[in-house]
Length: 312
Image (cartoon, rainbow, N blue to C red; front, side, top):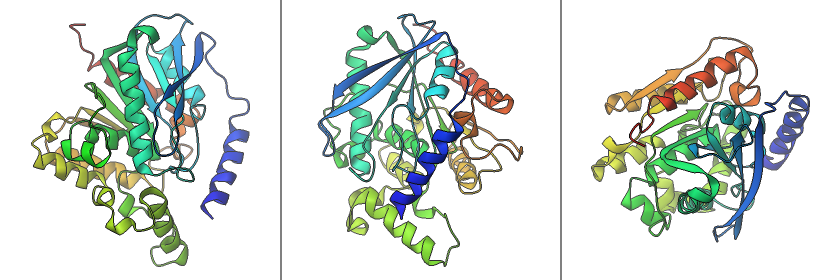
């Protein structure tokens, strides 16, 4: 069922993006790095450069969405080009999906890529004094999850991340994110479809016996925050811009829950939304050239710029 659903999404996405306009003054280069996760040995990634110039610029890592089951480094091609056009060097990646790996592989691969980029930042012209992350939908979940892992010894142990370098993250911008997997509601609560999708997604992310998995204990953002509290690291969580839309029927509530959680813990955050009925799930990623999308993405740009390391 899950495969068929995402096969249909892929087909409709491809049709919708067929004639999308893209910035002409941005270049894209494809690279490969070794990760040796349980799911794959090598990881594909792109870097987008403004004006086709190899100049050291602030970095945005973009983590694509797709229900942890669909997408790759090309999924947000136009969105990444628009971000690069703002004056960032933007990185996108093809992490392992649930039909091949688990959540532990996704987190491990993201961490290994960032570690690799940091080590070779001169080669790729990346300014890691100004490092930012955005991710849409499932990528929003991975954005906050990686961020928490970067701050927690416990999570590093769970995900085998102890020998990986985590640079300081200046700010993050989760985009229409899925922050509460245990509260995910795709169908009516008591329906067989909801029960099937809930159990199925958990097994795919955490394994057949997911309820016994230590990783499943830290599934949702509030559980991750509780662990950061236990380690006295929660105050290190970076400034967060939450992007959502009122028309995002499944996930907009999760964005408001995240904002509430951040505010309760006195962490820097902002939320931007729109009542526009044409602006549904990840509209600003899917159609970055539209007027409301430009407003959202300009807000992300300005938010990131406000947290630049000026001493660099």
